[in-house]
Image (tube, helix red, strand yellow):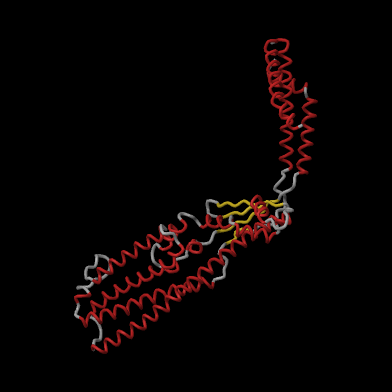
Length: 406
């Protein structure tokens, strides 16, 4: 007789047991699927804001200077992407507490009043946040009602947007105030430089510098004004940065390099490629020419500085005044039409398969021992002794536990 036919005969012989056990487990599965509390899932998807909105703290000052944004990212956020930053903000206590209060999580889940920690933990169990390869951030929420799931997901979106907009506007205001103060100082210095140059020209009857000298002074003034801007940028970020911050260290090195090159220009020893140099040192010029050169140079420096700061001041005012959302909502969460848990069909199918597998395995095991009882008595006795040893070991392990419990 073939093995397949033997297997079929075993199943037919034990069909009643297999059918009863399978039906019983199926009823258990159906009952569990209706008893288990229902959960509903809602999801919202966000497109992160541009990097300038998240990383542009000091790019306002650096303006169009090449590498400003990339230096800032390496200094402040390492290799963090906007999606990483958004996930970090969403996972923080500030956003979580706002969502808990806004959506009444404690009331919905029967958490005693005043237990904010328990409510935040419950919110964490309900929420899942991920960032895809495209940088799109997904916020998925499981809740006991469809409306609550959608409300919580949308509350995360709105609280994140409020946080980022408030942060950006505050940043713009602080930067505007900072640049505003510098503009006042530079404007006063510019007026003083104009007056000083005019007085000097009248006193010594000197109209202007030679054309070559004037071009060199203009180049020097541009470098000097850029140095002032970098110094202002350093003064802004240094108080809120650690001493070993890579961005701050890089900025200090650039400032030192600018100072060295400017010193070489003043001494008539400009390095190649760093702008026009002077034929002789400032100190070797005739006293009258040196005085005119010094005053003209100060005037050009203040003019360049004032121009650069004015541009950044306008940019800071735009940042302060903007009121558009900083995040783009690709998909708002909507109340789901169907529950996400329990999956009744899946639960029932698992119990049906489990009932069939266990009942069939029991039938084959019993038939196996019946077959070897008469033909292979030694093997049967060995299995029986093994079973007795297992029962003895289990009793010896459980007996102390029962005595301790009683």
